Length: 191
Image (cartoon, rainbow, N blue to C red):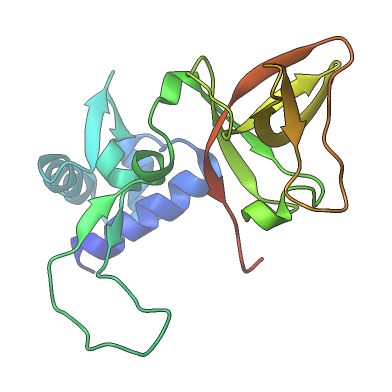
């Protein structure tokens, strides 16, 4: 078994348990017969940047969660395959700019379908971010939470607009509080 297969086993274990067992118990997880083999593997994976030691235990690094970003794939006619070294990318790197100011929200409903936001999608919402008319926002309109496009009337009053003609605009009667700006939409296509 090469280090990639051990790394895959560690990722699978982490996904299930959100922690690693003591180094001695990693023998069973990895199918290794001695703790010296585990120590050597952990040392190699640490040198490669996948693991780090914290308080006598091992912990994953950002690189541990990174996935290869392969070349572009056409949605039109097929293209020849290129053999380039893939870049490593985490989903946080791609979807989230400000991790300390970002929350995730699951969409319920179809009022934003024409903006490409569908029921079940996951939104990355950045808080305390400058907003302007035209931004898709998560907001409290009269104390009810919704995702809509922020718009402004000719009189300078903000309102919320759906991206589905079946829904009318929301002109708050008492209050409009912006929770944040939608910066990313994530969708699973296979469950």
